[in-house]
Image (cartoon, rainbow, N blue to C red; front, top):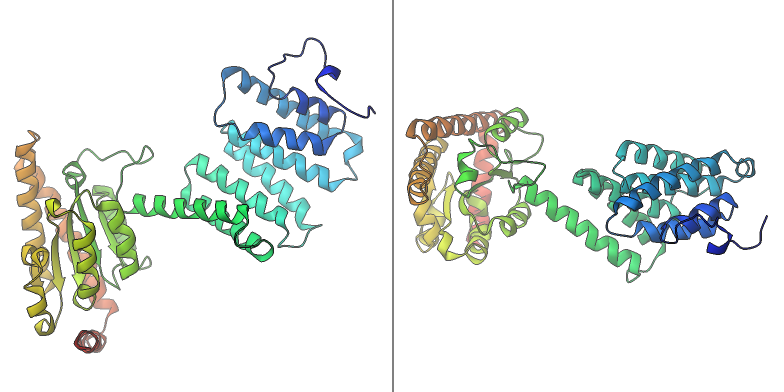
Length: 380
């Protein structure tokens, strides 16, 4: 076996600009660590030319030949490395099923020889996160990036470059998911032609600790998604904050439980530009403690305060109807009145369905307790 492999050892017919030339021949000569470093550097390139796509085909061929080589059967480290490199290559060629298969083979080998918090698992999970990100599956991407971060935090200093990079990526994935949940249109989610809210740059956020939970009203929420991407149901103040950053350039209609009003309304006023004139509806059984404060909030005066959900939903749909018709005329995009009415009727019906589910989940005693607790909190 030669002691060194360089460009000069490759055949004369090998193209000098072949980005995999050195790596291919390093693998043929069983110089696996050097080949791994070379392929990883190549894989960092942001895009591929047509000729480079062919180079990937050759690289995949040589990797499989390396796996078949007799000298690898007793070296699990090398086999794992080859599977990981194959997975990364298939990610770049957008063959995601093959990428997953090779990552899983590498993990099976590594789990037999490495402790579960070994740094190599962190790197593999990070690369799997990149694979899911490239595929457009941001939820899975976030899960694997977080697994990588968890492992690295056990061994590396918080200021380590790996930690800094993974923190940025995790933050980016979370923002992406919030943006998608908030109804932002993406290439993977083309706008429904009959999504009247999206067509008029409208966003509805509904803060309710029962309805906003993922496990509640699932079927109704799926029905909502069939007609609009412009409704977000949340169950906490923190979820509201995450949404607000992504809808500040849209006309916002916001339903808030009374006990959260004094926390959320100031943030709405701060984040949403005055030109967008956010509309806020407060739902509260005991409105006395909020009346004086609410009268000073322009956005609440635009919407109103309600102690009955049917009254609130009627006001909301009327406000939406007026706003949509106004904007449709302004932008020469007038929709047939019957189409708008049908859309809003469906929306209102589903809202009412969610309220019925909430009533079934919440006993009268619990509702009274929440209202009394809110009164106590706001009075402090």
